[in-house]
Length: 170
Image (tube, rainbow, N blue to C red; front, side, top):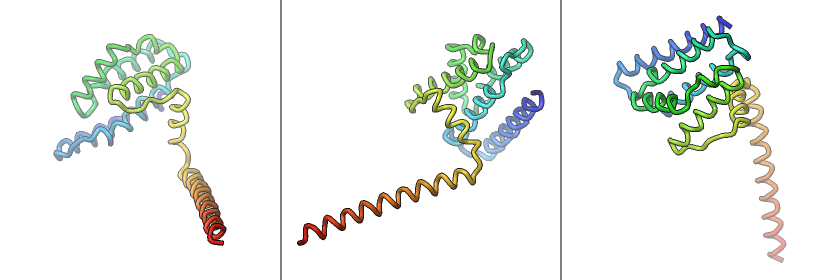
């Protein structure tokens, strides 16, 4: 468990380093670029949370989540995230992994509502989250199957259209 948390902290530190570097180079920090990565990080934190955490783990996660708004590259968005934490505190949801996952999903949907983006069900969330872990070869295979189906449908529609055309010409 310590290794997983350490790995996430290292990932997050590298992530922040790149944002600082970009800010130093006067590049615009587009939320459409970094936002999905932040959400993935938050959801991963919930996914690796212990099933029944002790008080030390709860405190560490509480501190991380409460301070998360400070590390969001755009101050106004960080402030909005902090306001959301005040409206929907994480403390009651730190008793189990499942409740923390539900809380992160809830907060994500609340922010999406505020941004007038679509919300998703918890089931869709799990599907989308685990979809990111599929090997590229599996993604490619699924994509090719879909392309084949589309080609077959287009071919059949073309044949039907051709038959109708010849039938009406007689």
